[in-house]
Image (cartoon, rainbow, N blue to C red; front, side):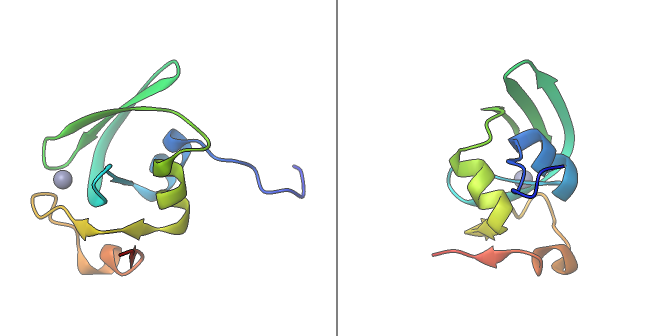
Length: 90
Ligand SMILES: [Zn+2]
């Protein structure tokens, strides 16, 4: 492994954290992840399905790496212990 930090993709970050932050900054708990080539299909606990490019340099990877969120998804019912790992970004 290189000394330089390996750039992680959306799928690797979601696999590691178990969460995803939508475009509006809403934090969702991910219940399943399916990789389709350059894209990943994420099924959230609340039933929402989001398809994103499995990029290493995107809004989603930046938010996940920094553990930022605007607000948690109420329907995903995220535990406070999990929420405390994230920081609210205004
Ligand atoms: Zn949700």
